[in-house]
Length: 195
Ligand code: IMP
Ligand code: MG
Image: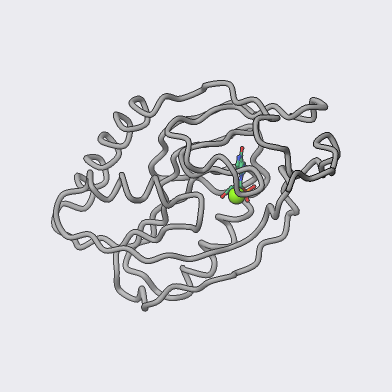
């Protein structure tokens, strides 16, 4: 049965399908090329060691899956979930641990794998939590870095791309859980022009 609800009435955080426009920023093949370099760089820094990749759910899932395949030798992974953005595009400035790791990281070489470094508040919180657990080494790999937006004094050891201060989606990154499946990264513009 056809619905009588007007299509134009939508909460701004939930654009109807096709309403937001995504302008290309990074192609899937440019991303893959960069990830191959990052994988080699990471293995060169730790030639013999087993590496534990800690993916930050959910945005980093695609990046971790591709990065893991570009690091030769022993690699395992685990996942952690935090929330900072909720369904909006502005950071709440607060970080909460929603899902912890399955296993201990004590004595391990740990690489936190994150989709994007924005204000840095999420990563600052995560690094504090993980450092307390006495890893042998704690490094950070991010696909994207919005340098201009930094509030917390944190930096990544491995960075894919430094990007301008725009809200981006695709390749794992979402807006209200949408667009994660896009193979490219693009700049999202919503009707009304807030982004
Ligand atoms: P931070 O705590 O401000 O550094 O924010 C990090 C988190 O905010 C990331 O893990 C993303 O989930 C989210 N985020 C920041 N910027 C963007 C963006 O442009 N698109 C999608 N998510 C973003
Ligand atoms: Mg997100």
